[in-house]
Length: 464
Ligand code: NDP
Image 1 (cartoon, rainbow, N blue to C red):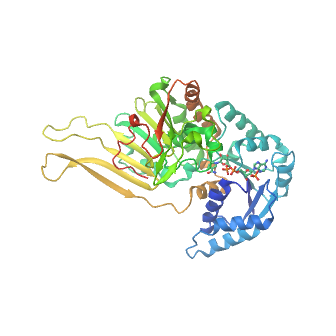
Image 2 (cartoon, helix red, strand yellow):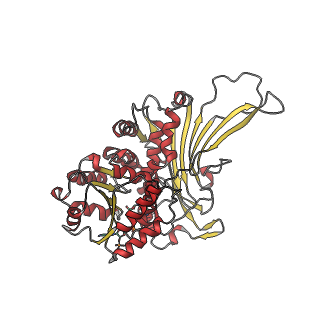
Image 3 (tube, helix red, strand yellow):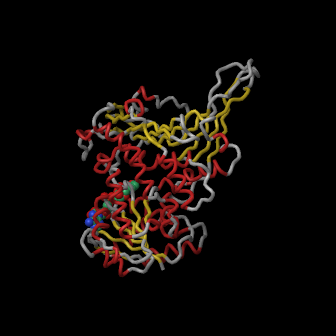
C-alpha cells in the first residue's frame, strides 16, 4: 500500500486539478494499492471529504476498464480526512507516523504555509521513502528558493522532492522531445545556423478568475515565465540526452538554463503591461486595479515578455522570446520556431519569400508547418502552404501524469532544485529592473491583443 496525503484538502488546486487528475489516473487502472488521505484546517467530517472526492471523480470515463472501476471505488470508499494545522509542531509528524508508506505528501497549501510546515518538521519525524511534493511558486526569489531547498533537503534527499511543474505533464510539451529526437527532419536544423528566432507564448483570455490575492503578488513574469515557459524553452533548446531517465534529461535541461540570461538593457529586452477595463466574449472585465484584493501601487503586470539568450555554441545569437498574459482577446499558446531564409533563392521566383515556421500548439495540441511552395496559377510565384495536424488530445489531465510520477517515485516530470534556482537567477534582475521602474508599465484594454506596439496581432491564425 502507498499513500497520497493531500494537505489543503479544501483548496482550489485540490478540487479543480488534483482530484480530477487522480480520478483519471485511477480510471485507467494505473495506480493499484493507493490510499488517499486528505487533511486541512477545516473541521470536515470524513463523509464531507468523501463527497468532495466522489464529486471530482464523477467525470472519469471508464471505457469498460474493470480494473479502473475497482481502483476508483476502493480509493473513494477508503479515503480518510484529518483536521490538521500543518504549521503546529508535531501535528504533521504524528499523522505521517500513522500512515502506511511510502507516503507522498502533496503540499496544496499557500507557499508560506508549506514552507512553515516543512520548517516545523524534524528529519527524524519523516519516515524513510517519504516524498515531498511542492507546487509553484517555488519561492519568490533566488534567495527564498535556496532557503526552501535547504529546508527540504534537511528532511529528504533530492530524488524524493517533487517540485511540480504541471506543464511538464502536458503531453505536447513533453512531446517536443519526441518531435525533435525521433525524426531526422527537425533536429539537424534546430540550431543558430538555421533558426532565426524562437517564440514561446502563453496568452490567455482568462482574467483573474478569483485568484487576485495570489496573482497580485506574483504577476505574469513570476506566475508563468519563471516556471513553465522557461521549462518549455529548455526542452526546445536542449542537446539530445542519451536517455529519458531523470538524471540525463534534467542535466540537459539544467545545462540550457545555466547558459541562459536576459540582456541587461531591460528597456529593450523586456516589456510589461497591465489590463484596463474591456470586454471578452461579451463579458465585461473590470480594470485590473479595481478588482477586489488588488493593490494598484504594487504595479503588478498582467502581460510580460522577455527575450532570453542561450549563450552556447548551438544557440548563440538566436533570441528566445517568452511571453504570457491574461485577459487577452485571443488565446495563443504555442512555440513558434521561425527559420532563416534559404542561402540562395533561385532567381526567377516571384513573390515575397516568407520564412518557414514550425508551430507547436499547447492547447489544443497541434503541430503546424508553414512552408513556401510553388503555388497554383503562375508556377514561378511562391505561395504559402500549411501542413497542420491536431495531435491526440491527452486522456490524462496534466495532473494525472504529475501524480503518476509522484506515486511511482519518478521525479522526471518535476523540477530539480538547482534548476528551480536557475530559473530565478534568470528572471530576478528583470524583476529588480521593473521594481525600479526602468521599464514602463504599459496598458491594454481587456479583450485586446495587448498594447498596439507589441505586435501581438501580427499572427493571422493563432493556435489555441
Ligand atoms: P487555496 O487558498 O484555494 O487553498 C489552500 C488550502 O490550504 C486550503 O485548503 C486551506 O484550508 C489550507 N490551509 C491553509 N493554511 C493551513 C494550515 N495552517 N493547515 C492546514 N491547511 C491549511 O490555494 P490553492 O489551492 O489555489 O493553491 C495551493 C497551492 O497550489 C499554492 O502554492 C498555489 O500557488 C499552487 N497552485 C495553484 C493552482 C490553482 O489553480 N489553484 C495552480 C498552480 C499552482 P483552509 O481554507 O481551511 O485554511
